[in-house]
Length: 284
Image (tube, rainbow, N blue to C red; front, side):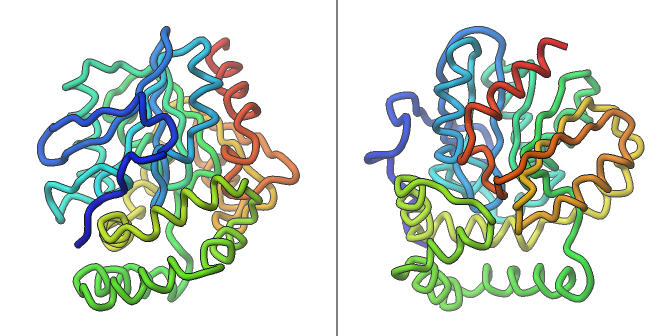
């Protein structure tokens, strides 16, 4: 596949560096001083989605954002470690290598499932603040066919290139963003367009979708004692707000805070709101 997204004109490029922790070549961004907050994006995202949240939080925190394996500028070292449990292990290895001990994890969508598994394994009372968390599988036949289709495409370079051409075509990014229920800036649209033109990013996203299974997490929800706050955009068209409420009801220490007028990319639409919510949780 093609090269990963380059740092040219990428948000906060001056705060970027690369770390080799087996099996991946990680792209990380750090800024600010104080307690560490780890930011985890969702499937098909990258550090760019936190660009405004980072500058806000960096006023009083040490902020760490990473590109997940195969996403953005993190280069995959293995095509067989994009499942939830293995990705959680690999992110923890990166945290251990760098000596990062997050005071909180702020995650978006599929990144919330990853954050839960990391914190559950650590056994600490570190809170998770999750934006529109994707904690449940697709319902019905789509839940079976979608991973199979992603696996097929991920293994087929020809199919992957066809999808890349379609996703990077004129107007496709705007159409895709409309399916999230969010309205983001022209800068944000341009950054997603750059991501979707990257063969490596597309490959990593498809591998994650193909290997991502949430059944085990769903069955574990009643046993997960991680303190959680779920921030929900009521206009989210990607992760139904009802599914987030259902997940929270199963968990012993989860609360849901809903916000009118925002969609799946709530953290890009209202970064100050998300940053302030995290501060409020840490003051408890």
